[in-house]
Image (tube, rainbow, N blue to C red; front, side, top):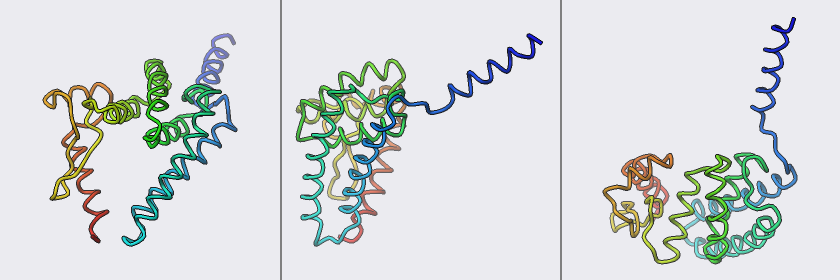
Length: 199
């Protein structure tokens, strides 16, 4: 009987552990709403009419600024919303909104410091951390580490801006779970050309 009960007990422990049990379901909903708005205004710019894009970009900027104020309140009260607090998807939504908070570099830096410990504890996405690291470095005028921040040449071909030691970038990217930079640049180039095919 004891031998039968032990596997059942272990199965129940692992099934609960496998579920996305979160500490703050209402916070999850709030972050997901901010993430939805962030993505929606970005899509409006990408797929809107060319003649409307300048006004749409102003709306995007205003949305990012408003979102940042709410993000700062969340961060002040809860710290970084990691996997345990809000689940993987909502944690990524929080990061995405922070990634777009370029007007508040100090806030981005504060989140990055806390996020580093969450990544070490495997409670935040290391690739998200890489993107925010590069974004902060570029905003500070420093070289980026992982080559995630791009610009485009006259042929609409993507290239990493101000990249530290390009020969070793793939080693750094692999260590944090990112694809080779060549694959990333090819994908970004194709996406950029498709998005701007009507220009």
